[in-house]
Length: 177
Ligand code: IMP
Image 1 (cartoon, protein in one colour):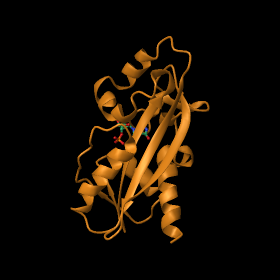
Image 2: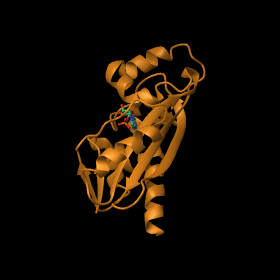
Image 3: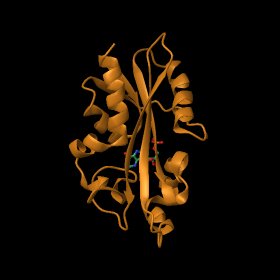
């Protein structure tokens, strides 16, 4: 049994595609304002380890847009809540370089062990319009190939996504011990 500390149902469903014996723990933790996802995840894990006994993971992700020097990056949650996908499309109006990537950092720990971090990225581009009805967050404006992530079902997204990559890296490490 592995605990996944998250309040995000979409994240949890994606993780279920990778880990068979998973339990969602919606207990919340402090997401510090820092320059990297790694710092946010590591700090969150320290807090979570004081409250949960047992194998546990949490995950912090962000969208990094090249033409915006990596914005929204570590501010992705706040930007999604405030200006949202339409705000990002507006910021990108007239911008030729649409390159962007998602980055995911998973922190894993169990009692008596120093937390470990696992990372994953998916590179793609910001489209000119939102498309699709699946996924969450920035999925509908982030394209890989011809499709937005919002047009992909869970299985398709889990083949290419940043989160699938970081979680598969954790899974491989767990299976290899
Ligand atoms: P956090 O990891 O929950 O802090 O996510 C930061 C922001 O990025 C939130 O607004 C999420 O909705 C968004 N986000 C994280 N992962 C994804 C994803 O896989 N697709 C689209 N948006 C995402």
